Length: 329
Length: 249
Ligand SMILES: Nc1ncnc2c1ncn2[C@@H]1O[C@H](COP(=O)(O)OP(=O)(O)O)[C@@H](O)[C@H]1O
Ligand SMILES: [Mg+2]
Image (cartoon, rainbow over the protein chains, first blue to last red):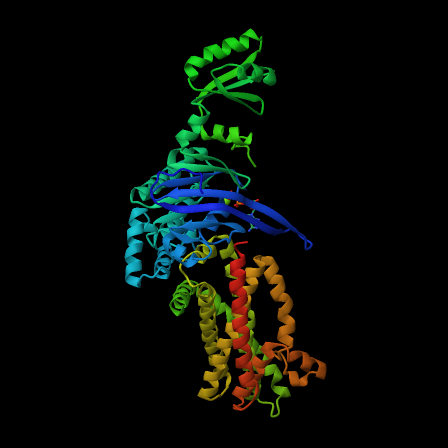
């Protein structure tokens, strides 16, 4: 039924044709339908870090909210940890941790209070919840700031509290919606390490991000979403390999002419125009570049600048959507 | 269910303990009302004594705390619709009504405590009531709080905008106040106003309070007030929980 390959281990998330259409108010009593998610299939294995990569408004948050039992899908089905997200929402909630895009930490109380409350809601006694809080504070270096009102903390510290609260019930699966947005590079790198540590302890992670390098560096597999649909799926390596290993970016006056010439070269796998530059994909850039230059020269096409890089997930996004993820609205 | 409600109540009480200034400021208004308004009205009482005026206006001062305090309880929750706290709680193992009910119980406790303080001031001014009247009055305040706070949370979750909510509450505050006999007893009002007042739940709270303070325990307004607030409280809670679900779109 699902055409998404998994490693054949146990699947912890299985979604089939998930859709969500919001009825948004447009003032003066008018409403408008917003198709936020338009048929998403997912299969996430136990113990992997799975990413949803896509630009703002792609439908990442809506997808995660449906899987986490917050938003009820308009149609389609999903099973999380073996339970249906609509019919068995209470069972799903026992098995997940959810860290929303906004963080969800009470600013007015010290982090310890929020954590103990979350633990007790999950069924722990006060003593157990306090012990669990200590454990998490140690893991996320929060012990020293656990008794300060959260509003006095930095963005990175708050984010670590959000994560700690999401993990309080030792969930086998945790959802992280844009976990590193707004963090400085140092805090981002630290959070990546913490997320990897989670996987190493056997926790499955589904995260969303609009950062290419984050998906590339962190996840085992990913889907790229755009306008509520999956446009590509696989491991970062596989996605990039499908395209090509290297990319040559050219700036020249006659983009269309150059594109025709390059498309006719057997070693060029793909060409894309992005703004005022032309991107040509090929497997062995170091050896292909001289040949490519000679071909352009033979047609008297003047080059203003040229660069050779490894292909990134942005190139994958460009190939599937015709836009760069950096520019995508 | 009860466990989750009490957990949330405990947490909210902790938050309040760290910001005790607000509930204390909250009773300044009714205390000032008692100090400055009741003496003014001794002339309309049969014997022109302050203690008589206190019997009429202390219940009004208490209902005032509910109106100016509990009706604004929901403001804090508007921020929680944005900062992700409600979203997180909604997908936690919490029994959903407890998320709101836990806060309402805190507001009820706070209202009862504030009422005790105001009653203390009234006692210093010369009010003398029986222990039974006081107990029932505090219970009446608790159910008034149950309704007012639930309504406030429902409004907060439905409107989700501080400006909008404050406009709406302000709009209803003055008519609710005047039509409950909070300022002057409704018995002084023309017939049509008395009829309109019968549709204002707070009217019954004030009337029931006055009956209790006058030692008239058989007054029918007393059970009516308790009944109305319990029923409206449950309805308002249902509304808030539904609004909570609508947060998800
Ligand atoms: N509650 C809602 N009501 C109406 N429209 C919504 C709601 N939530 C999201 N949307 C719309 O759905 C689309 C996808 O949003 P979202 O899932 O938040 O995307 P992403 O997380 O990828 O940025 C956007 O166009 C957004 O405006
Ligand atoms: Mg989002």
